[in-house]
Amino acid sequence: MSDPLVLVSNDAAVRTIALNRPAQLNSFTGELHQQLLAALHAAADDASVRCVVLTGAGRAFCAGQDLADPEVAPDPAPGAAPKDLSVAIERHYVPLLLRLRSMPVPVVAMVNGVAAGAGASIALACDLVVAARSASFIQAFSKIGLVPDSGGTWLLPRLVGRAQALGLALLGDKLPAEEAARIGLIWRSVPDDELAASAQALAARLAGMPTQALVAIRGALDAGAQSDFEGALKHEAALQRTLGFAHDYQEGVQAFAQKRAPRFTDR
Image (cartoon, rainbow, N blue to C red; front, side, top):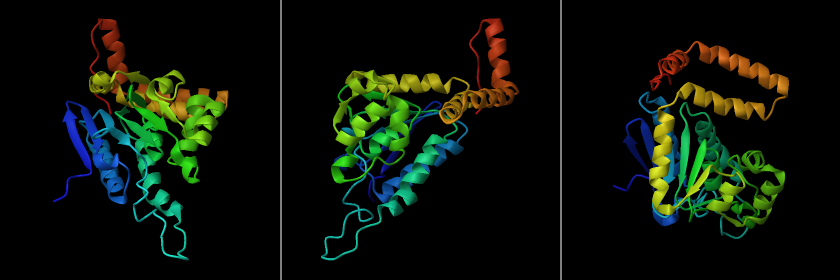
């Protein structure tokens, strides 16, 4: 029996999901997509999970699409028709990215090595990215005649602005993790030997916070980037109305008044 392509482990309310094709730098195949999407669905459906950590096994986070995978590899036969790459994108990447961006809990990307192509986009689609100093981010698409996908064209300019986004996407140069943190592409870069502890501590902290509010913050920031100021004000009011009726708001206010640590339970 072959090894699973996704490894899942739990530490209290934190679930860690690791891509497990280390010899191939965790590059994507159709089967890896299926197993990762299933793992994310399972985490979303498990009420005991309050934060997810996404990482890669071995020395890479994810090198993007495995270009040898039959779904995308050009047919070497003379006169063979080109592959329609949109089929694999619609079949695999679209549902994966939509699932990732709609998780009912925060998602932390623990980037332990190279995150290239779609692997970089997937890391950046997570709520917070913590990367080892030796890690790097590469928008590799232009080097094979493609555009950033997996949400890359949406994410990059929103994270670092148009000028930086164009430089990263057009040139496809390797961006060290420390520089990625400096320009605001990711949340933090930490020494390699502190990566696991830092990411897990961050995830544990998020798991102890009011989950519904954290997810609402993610959604509000995404929506705010596409609305005018008045629209953002109205959206905030609607969210506060909903969250104000929730247990966690009542608990947070009581804990503040009683000078004790809150015990958040909503999800």
